Image 1 (cartoon, each protein chain N blue to C red):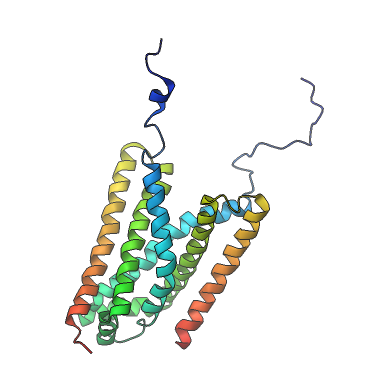
Image 2 (image 1 turned 120 degrees about the vertical axis):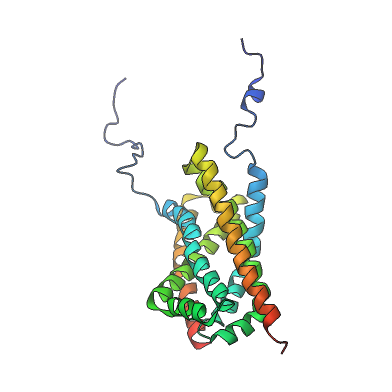
Length: 129
Length: 130
């Protein structure tokens, strides 16, 4: 005889155990990225091909600097969530899944840190125009 | 049980012989483009970090970024970005129960494919004349 209800037996056995919050996080960041994507392409497209000092001056200005920072932050958080929950959870399991998820988080935050470091240095070393 | 319908019944989709419908292909491509964008963002962030490191580091990163390989990665990333964005918009419609009929999903798939190529060409045109 089973002493627990069917509901109790099924509780917590969903695929990711945090489906709603995960879905909301992906959806909200996707709304932001729709707006940020064309702005990011303009900000970056305007810098490719410039000499080093002008690249630094370009991203030292508010619009390209802030847009690029926001795109990298929101984009990589979207990537971490999307990759961990959307892809890894479907294809990799057990210990490998945990290690892959840690690796994705380290990679994603590493990219954010590197980009913010570079953009901040550009913003603070470029003389005000 | 009498088999009165031999040869005219739906077959179970067997993985090795199953021809993926277009909406399935565009759906899988959403995940693939999302992960492939890692290459583009890595190249760009490497280029940004190199710009604040040293003239030599920037020269190397800038050479790679503007080489034919860099152009290929950036163009492919631009397409992947537009494809992922348009496909993501479709998922926002899906979330609200819209566009779930098979014919609608096929039409949206073509819209995503054609739209992403058109937006990539437009991005390149703006990049080269702007």
